[in-house]
Length: 485
Image (cartoon, rainbow, N blue to C red):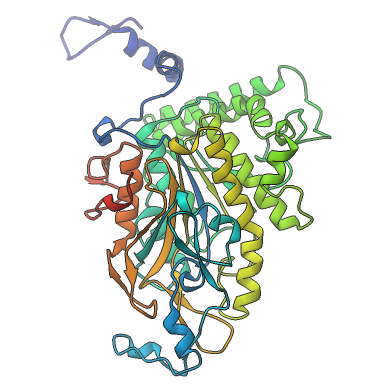
């Protein structure tokens, strides 16, 4: 096993150590060698596999994405339209979109807008806590999506494509930057157990290696399936089978996967599965400590609303506090989903707008504001980018008197933290809030801006698949420089 032959009749040539490790023991020597090389890298950062994606100086190290699924009404939150007050109840007319007229009428906002912070940013009474952070926000009022359909909208927001199969934003970030902590996943989704309309493809690594896909943490109980350590998170954990049983099971899985990998010529998906098993094993000792919120002061827990008697509000507060602890521990990208609401997304109020939006805001508003304030107090806001966004907005008109429909033609999102110019309003919709008209911003522009803030060039961060180079922004995207500090 220490020689190789390059051609018939040629003299044997000695194997290199790397080749010997790859050929022996089903390749596990090579895997171990690669792991040792990874361990030799600086502990603060394991470089990603695409150094060509590096751009300018990084302004942010981590991302927390507060996903507002279903679509928050922009004209009821961050984009005031006084003209709707004067036209309330009148028939809707829009010559650019005549098929959408039907039996519709303009609908004014049930909430008053007020100028907030030193910047005087208009924010409605729907979000009183986030309004207190106005000077940290950069609101983009001119977002545009492609289609008024939840499934494609959710995929487009997360992957830059209306079709399934592309890597999620968190996967691209993890691929481009690598992990800051080899004992925790680089991309975590804090979930309430509801699959979004885009399906689990929303959080998929697509054609990127499988170790870049999201790890789902549950809102209640054991955060990850089949990981049951002794900890305050599991008061009555299942007794261990024996001190050496789990490593033995892991070794068995390694052997079975290695057999399969060798029969397929070294499949990357199998290699990723092996790495994921080992990561899960390492996480057992670290995850309980990271997610043990009893270590937080009562004041911090109250800041996030953990003392609330409303279960959904308390659970969302737990998720936001967990997000802070995860990015402190080196998780690169954390997404927080909303508590379950309407069937097609928490904010999807085609009817009962006032009650539905108020309930959702009550659940999320305090915790998100608490997250911003807590990060700032700890000196972490400058290096943590917070994104607040849904897949589209809602119409400024209604087919009745108490609901709004899907609206991708112009809506609002906001960002705060790492590299963002706080107290900024960028772009504008028309007087009625129908069409984005100034500073039109696409999903590709949003993604390009997020990558730029992380020190990644969206045009150079690529992955070769199916004979071509893919990127998150496809062939589109421009950095929105006006919101950068």
